Length: 166
Image (tube, rainbow, N blue to C red; front, side, top):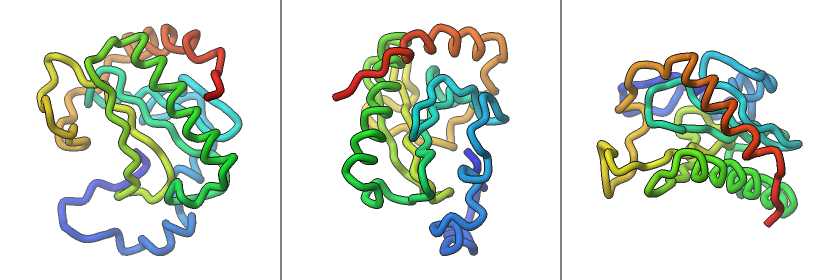
């Protein structure tokens, strides 16, 4: 999402600039309702969550920090960290309730685009990689059909309307 896929074992040439937020695709994108990557299903003061169009896994969602540019969660102050963590858990709970996976993976990576975001990857009985981390990017199937994506987003949004504090 918002990054470049590389096949070499090198960090992006502009890594230092990106970590400072210069040219960051997530910062530049604003807070769209929809883009080429997904549909926004949740928005709070500090995050947006997007149900992904990529055919990676049913319910695959990314929660993006929308405060100032940070690369690591350790750059957040205590209140920001609580808010971010609460939002990630709020979205995960909705995904768990709707999709009923066996397990949820929480992946805060930022290796291709250094902007704080968390991948939520539901894991199912028919999972292609049971018992192992889900290899994001290496198992993309065809995009989720638009009609199905819209229906799933519509079903998820009511589960996200009453934000719970933890």
